[in-house]
Image (tube, rainbow, N blue to C red; front, side):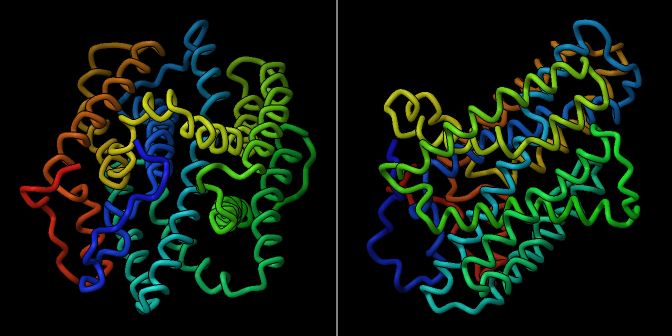
Length: 363
């Protein structure tokens, strides 16, 4: 598996829709995005179980298992997903401008994403796509700001909402925050994660070999995560404070995950061991919405049979991820893009892009 951006096909200058095709992808981003999608379902599986009719609160071993899942995944993979989304925006806009394409291509792309998010919510899923599309439209004009102010905006919006809500909830301090401000803080937080992904992508975060600062970020993230996990554990298994701390401090281990995976993917063992997630991550759009469809259809019959324990819930999660990885691999042996990725691409460029691979070309 190559760690570098693959070489583009030799005659792409005649087809302006090819600037972000499969041959142009950065493999490490696809792998990490696949891990993020799997991690988001790991958190959402409890929500889907409750929506399917499981009302009992976990106790005992189940409560401990779900607390560990919170510690490892809650907020962390949403950070990774938003961070990679900002990275993708940087790559897309860079290629778009290099090709001389109109910015309306980008706007159209995000409008389609918003529509997809509305559909996902209607199906019963926990959706981030609509908000991502809106925030990406807000991000577009802000990329014209001086670099220092753009980065400052990203850092402030990523940190301040979490600090305010931690002080208010886990700290027990009544800040008298207006109710309407709370959803705005949530949007600001996600926006900050996107800005950080956009900025670090421009600094060559995914270059090969990794920049020295990648190791530094990983080390700081690891050192910072240990006391946070201890803090969470000391608040009590399954407590609301433990949940809040795990979510509000997610950016620290989130950075550790991103940079640690980058470093791991530049080793032979890591590249080989995680390569199966490359195609899963390339079909992230299809797999994200597919998770909602699968859970909405499959979980109600299962919960009707009785209480689903934490180990059983994790088993269901693993089966879904394995099945989606297998289907993604099979699909991309015959097609250039995932089904929803292809629709998104055609709508983005307002052109029909070939879907099937030529007989002589396979991934």
